[in-house]
Length: 100
Ligand SMILES: [Zn+2]
Image 1 (cartoon, rainbow, N blue to C red):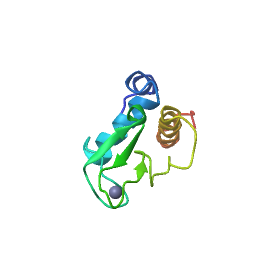
Image 2: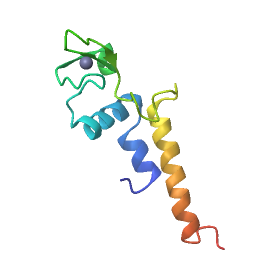
Image 3: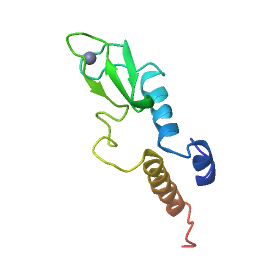
Image 4: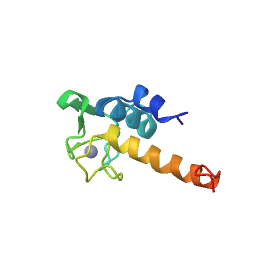
């Protein structure tokens, strides 16, 4: 996905850019209510969260609902960085990165 950590940070410098990215990956840019599947949702809280447009449901949700990111208060860009380092680390070991 990214060539190096620097590129990741340059592409997603903050929580918002990461949320936008997740929204595109997850919903193709159109938020879908995770509770009822309604795709007519409103953007609230400056794009940080959404509100379901269905009158029976009308729940609020964010792009991280039902993902590993949901339960944490860590900004998404820090999550992305950590995940990147973890995966890069794995690759590094298998290719003898540490000179073994
Ligand atoms: Zn809904």
